[in-house]
Length: 141
Image 1 (cartoon, one colour):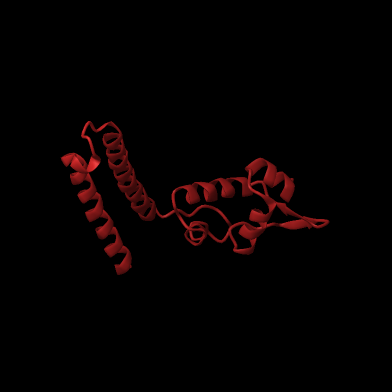
Image 2 (tube, rainbow, N blue to C red; image 1 turned 135 degrees about the vertical axis):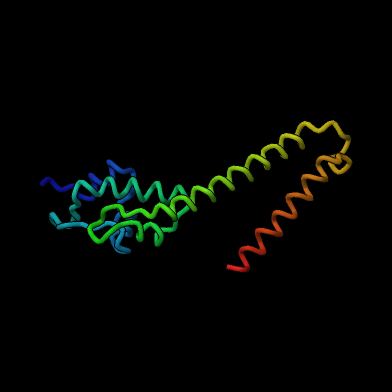
């Protein structure tokens, strides 16, 4: 089996060697040997790194991502957790769409002042209630 040294892994994955060393130090990936001072990784590390990058993009912490791999470094993904995160992303998408629509309305509103626009005032009130609700949820966690 041909191993990849840390430079090759970095070049193929786009992840810096320092990040690779950090991932190894927290147990996300494992080198199998050294060639001189350079860490050697099995080719499967590239799949692991793609999964790590996808997990980060989805908003998982490195600790949560670490729990998604079995002892052999292979993915062991909880479908329940993935569904929960997908639901959270759906909520974020909805909130971003509302924010986008609010910004477009503010930019295009014909009222002399935004504060004179009843739609703008209503949108601000809705946003304020949402912020209060989110702050309450965070405090409860």
